[in-house]
Image (cartoon, rainbow, N blue to C red):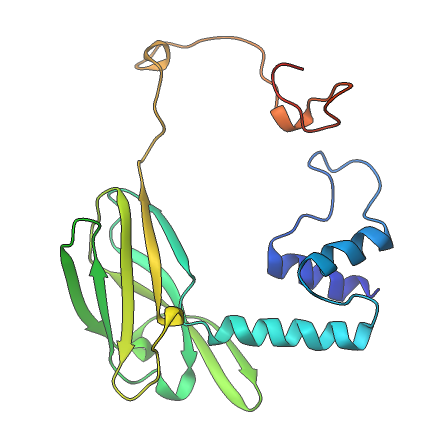
Length: 205
C-alpha cells in the first residue's frame, strides 16, 4: 500500500498511525487494511484507493459546514469555516442561529468578502473555503445554525450544523481553587497496563 496515500487517508479521518508514546513498531499492512475496511474502503487496490480518497475529499468540499461546531462560552465572534462553489461565493448568504431556549439570531454575509482559508477543484468546479465570523455570544447549550442562499441549493443537513457551547473550564475541586495546590504523582491512564488491561487500563491497575 502506498505510504503517502495511507497517510492522507489517516489525516482525512483524523487517525493516529503510531502509538501515543511514539514508540513501538508501526502499523502492519494487515492492520492498515483493517483500518480502511472499517471505513468501507478496499485497501487492496491502490488505484481504487486513490480514487476513493479523491471522492472523499470532494464530498467534504461539497459539505457547506461541518456537522458539529464546538466553542467555549463567551466566545465572540463565533468563527467557523464554510465551503461552497467559488462561482456562488459572491451571493449573500443568510444565516439563522436558534438557541436551545428558542431565541433566534439572524443576518446575512457575503462569503466572497470573507478571508479565504483554502481552495480546491473537482470535476472542473472550483470550491473555496472562507472563514465566517458572526457577532453572537451564545450561552452554554446545544444550538442550531442554518444557512441559506438566494439562488444556490444549500438545502439539507449540509447547510446547517449543531453548535455546542461548553463551559470555559471544568468543575474545579475546592482544594484546587484559588492559589492552593495539591501535589502528587501524575500518570496518563492510557499508558497503564496490567494482566487484564493491555495498555488501556484504569487507575485500578
